[in-house]
Amino acid sequence: MNSNPDNLPEEISPPPLPVPRKPTPPEEEWSRYRLLIICALVLVFFIYIFSAKESKRVQQTTPPGSLVNKTLDLSPLPQPGERRTGPEQGAPATVPPPGGVSEGLTERPGDIPSGGPPDTTVRPGELAAPGTPAPPPLPPLAAKPVPTPVKGEAFTRGLIKIMDDQVNQATFGWRPNSILFGKLGLTDNVNNLQLGVLEVARRTVVVLNESMSRFALTEAQNPYVNNAMNFFMVSPEKYWFPSASGKYREAMANLDRYIDDLKHNRSRFYTRVDNLIVLMNHFRDLLGSAFHNLVKDTEADGSKVSWFVCDDYFYFAQGVALGMAEVLEGVKEDFADQLLRKNSMKLVEDAITALRAASELRPWVVTNAPKDGIMANHRANMATYIGHAEHMIFTLMSVLATN
Image 1: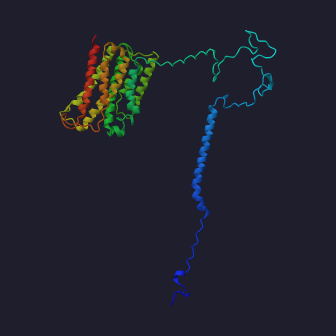
Image 2: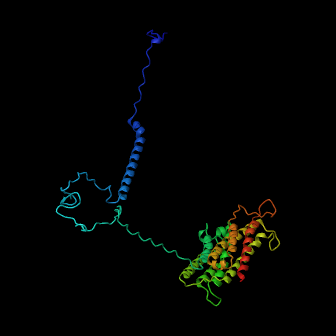
Image 3: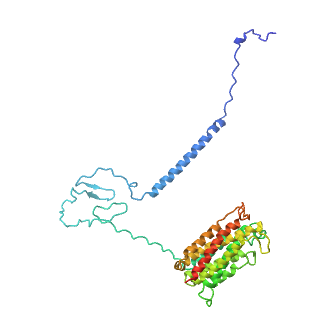
């Protein structure tokens, strides 16, 4: 059967009709330009805000009476003898003829013009006329007087600082008495460092209470310093009744009151050489004990020093170095006269340098390897600086004891 009923050739068959395109709804056309319109509106808003702020700033910074706020008078200049009425005067004004002398008046040498003496005051923003004397300069502002620290303030401030850094400024505060860090021993390194600082504070406050704050043994002890000494003697592991950290804060508050009394001449601080020798004797004893724990190979019972104990000796000695260096800075300032007279300031500075170096050692793990082995022996490294500081302190004591 023939599929082409009209018997038309295939070459001249009509083309297919075009498919009508689906019209685009108006919502889709709006969505195409919506983002651009929103961005343009936001840009216009920010431009308006910026221009408003800028115009406000210009108005605030422009002084009143400046050229910006004045209206220029473009009217023609008046002719000589012409009477004009100005908006400011409110009355006719006569322009004087050339020469500056009004008609009918004769100016004689030495006469003062009818308007009085010329105004030679130089106002802000104006230039002085030639020949006008310059105004006298303003007196310089008086410098605020800097309060002079009294004797004993730097020493006591150093004592307060070493305990404040551990009780109030350290992360998690005072740790030896805490249940998590102290009782369980999770941070024994920090605990031993804080115990080393506490030992320096205790020995320092004892000397301050017994020698430096009173003239002789027959003089009464300072009540604030005596309270601070008793509070520092509270066991560092006391968690409650009383709390160690709470008592240490009370000790620092009492030392602050002692400083206030020094400023108002209600207390004394004696910078005698014999008092400094007593303090150095305590420091030498403490450094010698730390040095012995750093260099020994066996314990008192004959057992070898354990790897689990060597880090305790290391960080306790580091705490001693950290606290003692700060106290010696106060000694260097308050006892400067005696140290310079004895030519021993260099000994104190060398001791501080060695103690600072000891306090800056930061090993990842404290190892207790043989002293001639491949691995480091961090106890021996710490002992180097502690031993050097002890030698400087001993030499200082010898120099101070000589006449």
